[in-house]
Amino acid sequence: MALNKLKFNSLNVTPTAGKAIGFNSSADGLEATLSGGAMRFIKKLTASSSATLSFVNGSSDVVLDSTYKEYIFVFNNIHAATNRAQLTAGFRDGSTNYDATVTNTYFYSYNNEDDSGAGIGYATGGDLAQSTNFSNIGTALDNSNDACYVGYLHLFNPSSTTFVKHFIVRGNSSYITSGGTVASEEVYAAGYCNVTAAIDAVQFKLSSGNIDAGTITLYGIN
Image (cartoon, rainbow, N blue to C red; front, side, top):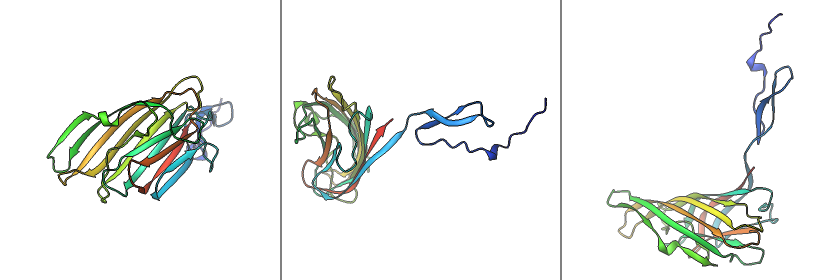
C-alpha cells in the first residue's frame, strides 16, 4: 500500500467561533463542527458623564434571558466624576425598578504605592442582607487620572424562576488615599438575588455623581 504525504500547510484547521476541531472520515480527517464553549459578545456601553449604564433584556440588542446560563459584565477603566464614589449594581426582577432583594458579602486587599500600608479586610459597609439597595462592587474612587476601576461580574442563570440568582464580582482599582498616596485595592464580592422571578436587567451606577468614562461589556457564556 502506498503512503501519501500530507502537506500540513494545505489544511485550514482554524476552528470557527464556539466550535472545536474534531476528526471525521474525510480526506483530511478534520472538521470544526464539534460544539465548544465560547464567550459571545452581546453589548458594549460606553460612559460619558453617564448617570447610569443599563443592560435590559430585549432592548438595544441586549440578551439577558435563558439563551445563556452564565453572563459576564466586564468593566474597563471606570472613572468617577466625583471623589469617594463606588461602583454599584442593581438587579431588576420584572418590574421597572432595580430593586431585586440581594444578600451579599464583600472583602478587599490593598497596598499603597509607596509601601506605607497594606492589608486585607472585611467591609461590613459593603454588605447587604435581604436589601433592595444597589450592591457595592468596587472601592471608593478618586476623580484624578490615577484612579479607575477594572473587573468583572458573573451572573448565573438569571432566567431561573425556581432558584436564587447568584453573582460573583472581582475587581481592582487604583485610587488616592486620604493621606494622598496612590493605592491598589482588589475587591471580592459575591451574593444572590433572593427572588423567584427572573432577572431581566442589570444597571450600574456610582454611589454619587456620574460615571465620567469607561466601558462595560456584556458577554454570554455558551
